[in-house]
Length: 130
Figure: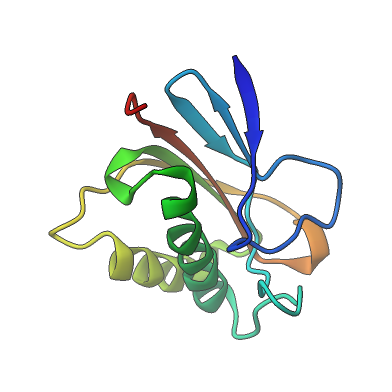
């Protein structure tokens, strides 16, 4: 059974899509950009600030789905500026410390992202908890 899920702790979608889909024990997020949950505005401050906002939005919503960072299997990072990847990585390492196992990760350079974002990240989780 495939089920669409949402969270009031995530920014409202600007287009028609499901923020998260559960298929059996797998959960897949839509690509997330750094939108403020309340204003819907894109985070200022460049790629590092955007990555930090995406990760903050994600971690705020995980309890709504009965998930944790430990359930994360993989992440795909899209960026329009690989020169800023050290800043993206710094934000990543604030979340995935020695105490939190990092997931598998792929990074892809792209020419453009929605709403002029410089970073978009999608996540896959696995949890067989009921």
